[in-house]
Structures are given as C-alpha cells and as structure tokens.
Image (cartoon, rainbow, N blue to C red; front, side, top):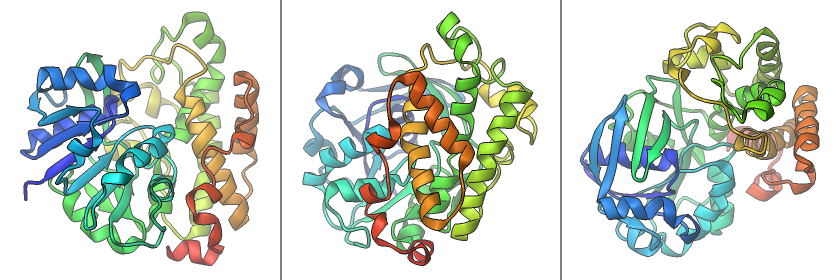
Length: 360
C-alpha cells in the first residue's frame, strides 16, 4: 500500500531513507530544523535525491524544507532519521503536528530512541494513540557526495529489527516496513533493538586505539580496513560481552556483532578482526578527521551512558564500558556521566522495575 511518508532529518541516513521509500513509489516529504537548511534546501531545489552505488537513480521528493507542518501534513508514516543527539530535536519539531493513528519509527534507535522521542514529545511511554517504535540500525552504509547526492556503499541483507513501544505496536510497524525492507524481523522489545545496535561495540574501540593516527592524519586512512587489528578486535569483543550480558539479563536475544555483520552483508568473516579489516561492506570508508566525532560523542556519550545506566539498574557489571566512558571523556575534555545525555530517567524508563522493563 502506497503511503504519504514524512522523513524528519537531512543527514546521510535521512537522505537514504527518503530516496529508498520514494523509489518504492511512496509520496515522500522531508523536513529538518532550520539550522540544517543548508542540507535540506538543495533537495527541494533539485526536486529530489540522486544516488549512486548499491542503490542508484533519481528519486522525486514531494517537499523538502524547514516547514515541518507542511512535511507532516497527512503523513501516515513518520521516519525520524538521525543520530542519537538529534532524536529530541526531531521529536520537538514533530510534536505539534502529530495526529492519532500515525506510525512513527526512530531509525536507527541509537539507544532507546523511541522512548526518547515519546518523552520529548510529551507522549506517555505506554500510550498507544500513536504507534511509536524503532529499528535496530540504519539499513544502509551511505555517505553524502554532494548537494542532494548520496552514495550507497551497501543496503543490508538482514539483521534488521523493529520493535514497538510498547511491544503491542511491533506487528503494525513490521508490516509497514516489510515492503521496503523485506529482510526486517520483529524484535522482542526495544531493548533488543537498542542492544542490537553495534555502533558502540565498534566505533569507540577503533577510534580510541587509533587516536594518534586520527590526529596525525586527520583521518586519512580506512577506518575498518586499516584501523582494525587484533588488539582492536579484543577491545570490541570485551565490549560485546558486556552488551550480550545486559541482553541476557533482560531476556532478549542479542546477536554478537561480527555474526550480525555477516548476516547484514557487511563482514567477510565471523570474528572481531579480519571480519572487519577485510569486510566488503566497509571498504572505502575513511576514518573521521577528529576525535571529537559522533563515534565518541554519540556512541559513548549517549549509548554507552544509557547502557551502563541500564546495566546498573538490572545488576550487570560493565567495567570495560565504564573505562571507555572515562577515557573518552579525558580525550574530549568532557564529563559524559555528568552530561547524562541519554539515561533511564530522561526516557521515562526509570519508573519501571527490572521485571517491568523486561515486559515493556
């Protein structure tokens, strides 16, 4: 069934999502905060998005600009696409124009993105007037190559999960996503989608153990193909063990990160070293040009802060994640714990007992 779709956001992921849904015949509108008009206005001026790579062609976008009311008018599906630090801004932008019955998907969750959206939009976490949920990851490896232009390195083949908040909304969101993402699977809860996000396993470890190289070269090397060595793999594996332990305590199945990478078509092997350093889905992706990058500010400052807060609530030790939080704070001269960008309290989840969390 063709729908009116609103994509809120204008970064790499938002452009990719808008392109793919438009290519599937849906009427797609886009909006973002005026602060990012330089990203979204070129789409409106071009009348759409041009893509190369794994997906290619031109996709017409019905509207692209900073008028959220216009973009959301009549939308049956809202896709909130952006990094963790954009979720609250997106929710504030959308909140005045939401109508009952809409489906709203935070893609990717980053860390309890659906709960953060509800909390910011003033929607109780158990409210079902809107079907709000999240996906475990962005289903693309994509980069912007120019104004209204993107290159798809990869559209994943599997390992893509969706969950509603509460879980009663999962079936509806699954049915909606199935046409564009036939590989989508239902997650047990938003804790499965949140924990299945592999970014905090990969990005901080590679970044921290390549810190000198990033500073010396301004990121002039391949992040995965050159940045992952056995020592880096060991640190990734240690983080992953803690992530899996959190999932086990919450009663959700979390797939080890390299195993998931093989399922998605990124990784070449099911291990923490050559699985990444020879991964076809990551070839050509350069490192960031600075340590002050979302690989630390988001994946540590938001996701690891949230995961360690959750782990403490349910009694799971996370010494490796805690160490990464501390070291990242030293390097960036920030106190991520004090900033508390994403926590149980900030997402309305602090009011639930561990047993209630598992049933949410």
